Length: 416
Image (cartoon, rainbow, N blue to C red):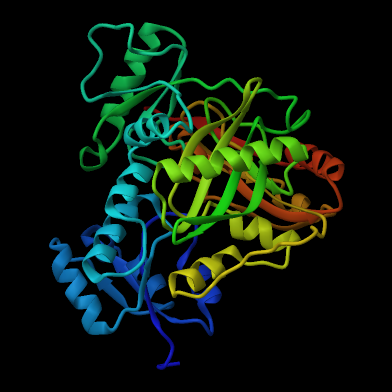
């Protein structure tokens, strides 16, 4: 094992857990996990990480961290968290390792910067305005209806719908007050993209995601993943593959993704691009510079591929080609959403019944009784994750109804 290359994973809440990374890396490389000062005080987290590999605390001076990694003999860098893309890019630049450039990392993590580059690159012209202070007046530069969200963030946390100037002002204030100051360059007020529910078909979401691997500026799009309808206001409720869009729509979606990645000058690494299916054609929701959440779970269920292992191999310099081939059924992860009201979970019933349903392979709760259910946590407010593989999309439609009928939440109001 000591002759295997060493991969440093800049760890934070994201699309892959340490245990998943450890399993995917078996036989490819050794691992070292990077944590910040806050994480270094979390003994439960450190215990979990140390089960998977050594842990190194990030120094406030990135150059010092880079020197420490070089002394360890680190061969590659990677992160699965939006919150660590920029710091990973900085370390990669200091160490001369392939990863997103610092400029690209900024575009992938700053929603206002990304919108500007997409517009300038001719990929998408969705209106977007950055606000760093609460709104006192509502000018003509602010689009309505709008999506209001943090300029940096993930999983639709603190994301609001605003139809009126008053709603927009309240949403901007909520974003500025609800996100930690260190992660708060401001709130973006972004033109609402209205989807066409007929494109993917009845019962499915009006958006998809494109999963890509980029090497030396060449993008390989290896999957288009379908979505379940969003829970209000913009919370993901699950993913499935293959998607239900037509060949023509798929081609347009992939072409738009290629143009978006070029506009952002993505040269290396995994990307997860979310695309809205509108009456006028596909539009970019956002581009993320890491493996998408649940992508490995969904794609490994119906294709003989592991995107997680492939991202590790690509970071190590291997010439990765993902060719999924025909799907063996429809793989899915469904995440029933919490109510859109602040509450506390008293009990969650029905998971045993759900586990017995044909096609379900795993079903587990997200949290214990007493958990605060806060819809402002975006997709992180889901009640459970249910994963499985079924024969076709019609069976998946039926299964979701069975899951919803079986799951029963007992909850109590909670104060804001």
